Amino acid sequence: MQMVETPSELISSLESAQRLMGLDLGSKTIGLALGDSNHKIATPFNTIRRKKFGLDAAALADIIAAEHVGGLVLGLPLNMDGSEGPRVQATRAFLRNLENLPDFPNLPALLWDERLSTSAVERTLLEADTSRAKRAEVIDKMAAAFILQGAIDAHYGV
Image (cartoon, rainbow, N blue to C red; front, top):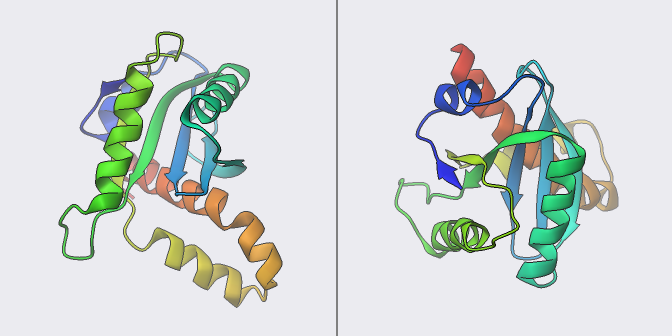
């Protein structure tokens, strides 16, 4: 992984028609979102049920190849006061482990503050009167879209 500091640096590193992928890393699932090829809109995509790291990484690599992904935005689960806790350490470890895989694509990656992303998505789903079962099914990929859209919007100054 090539760590970048800003959404603009990430987007400018993409080749023509490459897309961004947003990831919401959880202990049981990885929510995925994809950006359009114009880098304007994030859409919930899929959820990977976590198994073993190697299997998770292989599933992620397959999606990256199939969807022409050129950069990653990973949610950084900072504490509300901005400090880093165990979940941030787990996110950084996940990235380090991806870097150590010889066959994993070497993509630029941005860590993006995800504070309140899941609660914002949960609130939206509740307002839409979404059932508990449906919320559980879509919340992770919607949180990934929220994270990715936040980075895209920051690039455009929205």
